[in-house]
Image (cartoon, rainbow, N blue to C red; front, side, top):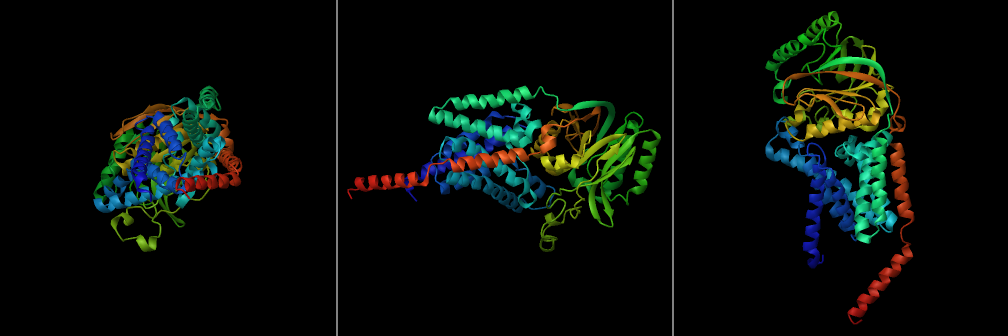
Length: 513
């Protein structure tokens, strides 16, 4: 190693960590979205002259900054509610962030190794490879679809692109904008800024397009937020008080609303154990002509499911398909189960629900259901919609306490409403319980960490956005095309060899050889 360059390398690594932190600040709850464009521009500049090996380190530093700040709430789940000691929880969280950081590290290496040469590579190739690094996180080891850059731009002019190509198309626009800014300043090609501005102007104009239409049928809904914390939820002594609380909060709503919704695992026991109570609640709801829907664990001969059940006022049972590792199932269970308490959490042996389940039918409305983590998978959500008029997601964000995790989760849920042109009902145990309109705007909500009821109206919608028809595939194909274009238009290898020979010759002359 050249020791003279060590301070510069250390400063560059620190700068990349700060860029990753800046991207976290662009998401909810901070909302400083311009920071992520600046961070992308700085990242593009840092990789301008970097060797692939150095790019690997810079990309990893960026990833560590991003995930170390952006998913720090994992520590709360492991330590506060996973019964793990602080040092061990810290080690698990650090290892998780280091592992995730390897994805942008690989993206930086690929960019500098195969795509960077030429202006097309520095802009188009850069944007493509970084977006493809987001795509890798959709499926790698069951996927961790968090902190996609496009989410930070749901309240900006770029939001108009979401119904066209989803959150990943927004991410692509941000990467292109940052690269254009960087290369315009570096090479004085200010036309790139004009091009980037065009993406924003077009995105703003797309916001005026009504991709879907209301069907005229209105539902008055009540979403119950009991605010039972995770450390008390599964205690045996909390079971009967929980049933009493839901009874007390629900009784005044019957007959006053078309549907009452309880959140994910509202009843902390299996359906068959709580059946007498649920039958009684369903009978009262039916007599009041009110539909009642609840999240509850469900044991059947086929397995144990994290489920959403229409008790009365409609039909349907939905079993969660995308399970959370360690929270709902334990990978390598035969090795890990019982090793420490974190690997033996309550209700951590769920079975995956079957694919392509039908929408719920609630008061003659077709409702697409999603439980917690599922709503952050955009293409999964589209695949499961099956022409539904409304989106319903129930969640238990109590696992993350008062951290930034639940705010990020809600921001991602809002994006699903914008992408699909459907209103979204979100019922949670501790918050955020809300309704989001077809443009991704919050139309009603209640405060988090307070027991309360969200009472409002929603309307079903029909019609398709382009994203509903095609999903993310056009964006992925575009990215692969841009990456291929950058790779095939880079400088010929012969020119590189000549340049290297000339550099070696100059170096030899300077040494007097």
